[in-house]
Picture 1 (spheres, one colour):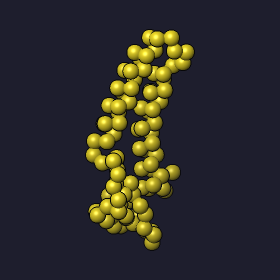
Picture 2 (cartoon, one colour):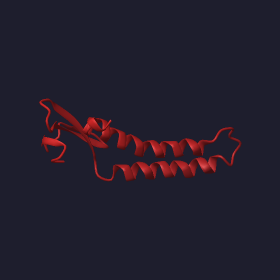
Picture 3 (cartoon, one colour):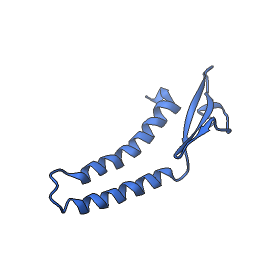
Length: 97
C-alpha cells in the first residue's frame, strides 16, 4: 500500500454489507481519493452464491426451458473476478489503465 498511497486513513468514511469506504491520497497527487475496500471473505461468499445458483439452474434446465441459464451464471462468475480486477486497476492505480 505504501507504494500506491501517500497516506491512507484507516478509519472508514462508511461501511456497507460487502465493503467499506476509506479516504486516501495517491503518491504524487494533491487530491484525496476514496477507496472502496471489500470486506474479507466477500468474494468467496459471492462465488458460493453463484455456484448455488448454477446448481439450481442446471436442475431447472432439465425442465422445458428454452434458453441456457447455466451460461448466464458462468458469465456472472467471470464478471465478479473481472470487476474486482478492473476496479483495482482503474480506481487504485489509474496509471495502469
